[in-house]
Amino acid sequence: MTKFSKTNTRFLPKGLIIIYEDNDILVVDKPAGLLTIATDSEKTKTAYAALTDYVKKGSIQSKKRIFIVHRLDRDTSGILIFAKTEDAKLKLQADWDKTKKKYIAVTHGNWDKPSGTITSYLAENKAQVVYSTKDPSLGKLSHTSYKVIKETKNYSLIEVDLLTGRKNQIRVHFSDEKHPIVGDKKYGEDEKSYIRMALHSYSIFFPHPFTGKEMFLETDIPVFLTGLVGGFEFDSK
Image 1: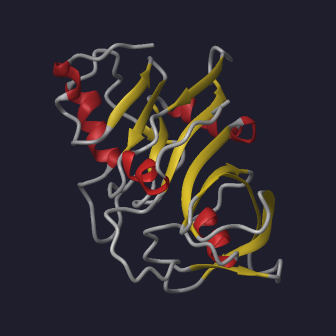
Image 2 (image 1 turned 90 degrees about the horizontal axis):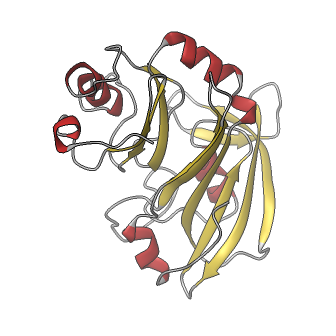
């Protein structure tokens, strides 16, 4: 595990935290509200841009470039892996089926079943809204496994095992079940305004692209999520 000085991390925007770094990979905890990569409307305020600046100016282990391995939605916080070489990127993506990502979410209402798997074909329309369909020719088969960790009068805390990694997958599947994620302005129907969306990628397990070492990394659960349900404890592994 690499230790980071204030000199190294001063190039990072507020809330973007490095949780692991070596010569091949860079793993961060991304804050909600920060894009992974540029879009047509936002070119510079992204995790990719900030970390590119970091490896050029602040990392003594840098080869001066980073490569995107996967993405998180702007409104989702949590673990993101970047590669420091194209070879590392390709190896990580080739072995992505061995990667296990877990999320924590707070949804509206109480679920009928304490656990289960949601399955549908996911497609995207011209307005960039993802939706479920029964037509396999239109969408990609997607599976989301969930387990209820805690319930309150209005909310449920859910642990999510992402079995496939489609765009907006968890958000669409939970909305389909009539339990949208708190603060989800795109797929929910919140009348109340929340400071962020209650979805966080909190842990990841993957083989290191070169050493083969089994890597397990996790983050703290954001205070906003714990505050909605009054705190909780669970085994993250």
